[in-house]
Amino acid sequence: MQNQLKHITVGDKANSRSIAVLARKGREPGIVWLGGYRSDMAGTKAEALDQWCGEHGIACCRHDYSGHGSSGGEFRDGTISRWLEESLAVFDAFTSGPQILVGSSMGGWIALRMAQELQKRGFDGRLGGMLLIAPAPDFTHELMWPQLSDSQKREITDTGYLEEPSQYSDEPNIYTRALFDDGAKNLVLDGMIDPGCPVHILQGMADPDVPWQHAMRLAEHLPQAQVAMTLVKDGDHRLSRAEDIALMLRLIENMAGAAR
Picture 1 (cartoon, rainbow, N blue to C red):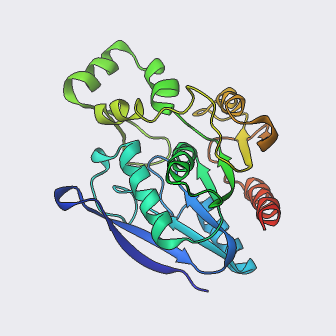
Picture 2 (cartoon, helix red, strand yellow):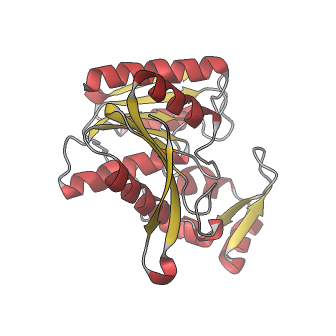
């Protein structure tokens, strides 16, 4: 089945935003892609994953968070709670049956929070697995805030945001006070996390943005019987080289086979 570009409206009145979705029909377990901060659903890994799903007749769903890619809304308004709400809305509207969440960087945080919210709803069995690529749960407080200078922290507090050059885009990264404040409400590394499904972490040891030790810490918060980790010694944050993509697809194939 070909991809079908659709839009779903999330939020009410002034808070509403149009979320762009690419959904490919196929057999279950389906694959749900959750991108990273400032990434969109047309990235290298997302495209490769969708192509693999098409070749194997597997359902695949990916979307752009508000303020990203083809979706509406302002990037400066983005928070973990906002992007989580959108991801759950897409999950509800475009998937059925067991799904494997593939979360890249910030998408790993979103995936973990989705699992928690789905469990609150009593939706046991909807997650067949989780592949977290360079996962960055709690990155606002664990990875970013401690690295900011006093002047940068004052700028966020006083002006409401901080702009920093991005090594991945011509556009600067924007970190808002709302992002940090909301991040504190979505922390997951403050206790055990049981997503109710197997979790595999794929992490580069040469990642300058999310240290491999952060992935190890996440593993300590997951049930031992359900977590596995693959470390790529020379892997960077993107893990988008041909060999990285091939490894990602092998892991997905194994997870999809085990979840059937």
